[in-house]
Length: 211
Image (tube, rainbow, N blue to C red; front, side, top):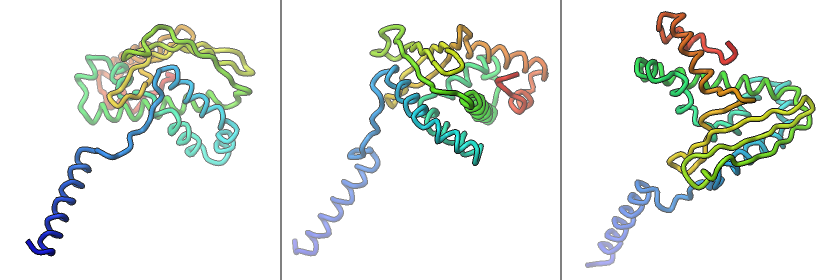
């Protein structure tokens, strides 16, 4: 075999190896996530509160950018798909088309971000404490109790967390001052479905977590 043929053979083999690496994802650095559920909550709120002044300045300049920044901090750690499915409930989730499910997930996410974003406005000197409710940090689920402090008082939140396939811990439900938000929103969705004669397009387009 002459030099040219040897070179061609090496190039073909190299191309094959590169293709295999691309397909398998080998050699690509995987993101490093917090190893426990409480570390995840700690990370989110450390980042959120450390940039609170900047967030407030952003709100004064552009509300949409303000909500986008909150989204970038919080959304990777919230399982909106699972939460939205639970809010719809088995009956209406089964009735809904794939498009309706997707639209409700997007609507639900946007409404929660807006509600949470508004709740941050006017918060002064925020701080928080975390407590793991059980030993679930080493399994696939956990409950984290958070006490939020600010100049306006204190709020207790319990996060029901689940571990995603990629290793991330994500929020799947909230209990705010004893109120199970997942259950509350599910009841609200069911009432709205009855009001609109189970026209899910109407339910989704009129959805508001403050209703």
